[in-house]
Length: 405
Image 1 (cartoon, rainbow, N blue to C red):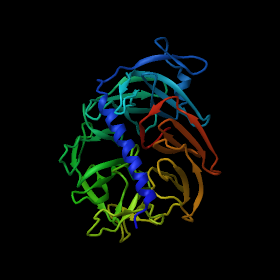
Image 2 (tube, helix red, strand yellow; image 1 turned 30 degrees about the vertical axis):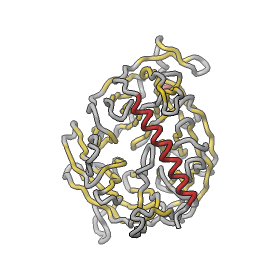
Image 3 (cartoon, one colour; image 1 turned 45 degrees about the horizontal axis):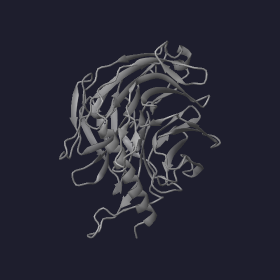
Image 4 (tube, rainbow, N blue to C red; image 1 turned 90 degrees about the vertical axis):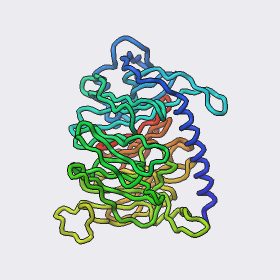
């Protein structure tokens, strides 16, 4: 029997997601210039004057775009100090009328992408679903923000071997996505509509989750140099992309690939979707076949253990050599939990701020960082001790790895 609690959660999520999309569509501002700001002792910002000090930029391990007071700010996140500081004003964001009549400034859809060296980052922003894309390069050493080549359109940006690529804007009737990179010089068609793209596992590869024309979900691996796309064998599952907001449900590093499973699928004639939550089937894992000798290898990857969570509906996922962290739970009761790779068992579980979308997550050193729409939570990985800090506004930022410096 379908979970009533799960259905209610999905309906709430779909409603808020529809409101967010509508809000983004209402704001059709063109590309916005970079404007330096001065920061006062209490962290407030004023337009004009000198930019934030170079030390503020050098202390930033991560970046996000935060909207407050009808302005879009670039903020720096200092993981060690559990601090957030405004670094620059990106532009004006006037109040817009929502469907229910109240006024708000909808935050732009933003992606932060680090280059291979970690010395700079690319900031990809889009203020509306049909608006132009603005790409900026952020030099964390000097605090310089400069314009970078922009595709003018597109979605789901990524870096492959330090070069910017993106998925083309799909037409309403499209059942497949095409990914492009002007710098790397490729156009590759995927077997379905892409809903998340990440670099890895390893150099020259991309991993993506797609919905095929028959409405089934798949994980695919792309060899960019060879223009080869390979589907990884998976059980009949829903990867949770249709109602997700933010960074997606897939993660990769040099050695591993992890995809979170929103629900398993057992189609019936009366209900061909029939997505049922299953705590035992929460995370699918693969590892790199280092010598290519494993008979189970596909696209250079070997399937690993399937991991379970203590809560339903896993979404964001991140990992390191020892563990995988995953955001689970319904929208109004979110959790983050860590699963130890050696034992497969849960290490700890931490409550997140209720009714606050998790837009992205990463591991920086020994700290798990979860970005929510209005807050950021730093979790000490060995102990599970959390510290939550308000962002001072609203964000729709996703981090696309490799993350941070």
